[in-house]
Every structure is written in structure tokens, then in C-alpha cells.
Image 1: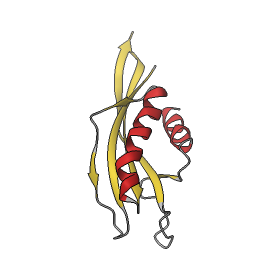
Image 2 (image 1 turned 60 degrees about the vertical axis):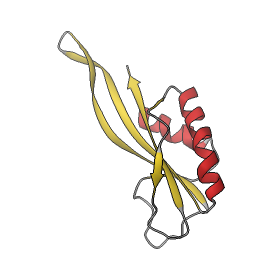
Image 3 (image 1 turned 90 degrees about the vertical axis):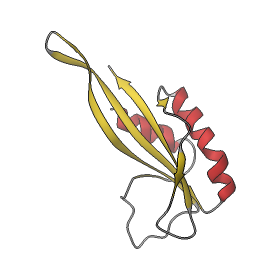
Image 4 (image 1 turned 90 degrees about the horizontal axis):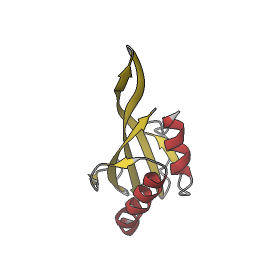
Length: 114
């Protein structure tokens, strides 16, 4: 499944990877980590009254306590996902964190499953 491909590809970067909002509230954030979530999925193509392709939209966020990594790692994430067939949508945007020690960078990616 495409969601599994996204997660396993992100894990190759060496950071902990979590489904967005799945971390236990009592667990301290790692110094740096990646979250992801499915924003949308839709029928992308049909043939003979059957769906034959699906579009997927994912949000990927890199969080870190190191602002230098928040600036540098998103380009590596984008290159890694692009090499795996994901399509980046723009460059991303700042993403606040719910803890004072971390900031994040949010990116969106599309994928087509045939």
C-alpha cells in the first residue's frame, strides 16, 4: 500500500517516524522526528465503470529542536520521497510545534496508485 511505502521511505532517513498525533502525550519528543498523515485520497481514473487509479495527498512534517536541521533536512526528505515516486507540492512552510523546544517544516506530496 502507498501509505506503507511512504512510511518505510521516511524511515530510511534515520529519524523516528510517527503517524501525526499518534505520540503518547506523556512521551518526551525526540530531538528530531518526522510525522505524516493522509490528507486526501480520491479516484484518479476509471475504466469500464471501475476505478483503476487513486490519487493520494500526504502531509509530512519534520520537527526538531535544532533550527539548522529544520532548515536543511526538508530538502533531503523531498529528494528521498521524490526518488520513491512521490510528487512534491511546492517547498513547504513553517509548522509550529506544541512544545517550546521544537519547530517544524511541513511539506505536501502527491502519489498516484495504479
